[in-house]
View 1 (tube, rainbow, N blue to C red):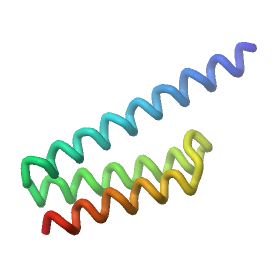
View 2: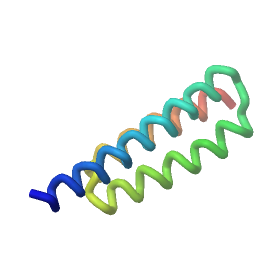
View 3: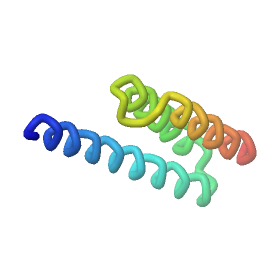
Length: 77
């Protein structure tokens, strides 16, 4: 039981970080800051890759989200 509780806490923290990074990135996109958004995109994709590698999110989910975020960045430029 303790193992599952520890893993659940780690997964929740990781998912929360993903959501925060994604929200920050979308906020930068909405304000039109291209350079800052590009840097934030790198952070978001790296975080999604790490989360997929450790099993926090499914690999396909991470790839889908990264793709959609990249399309939004491309529209801005």
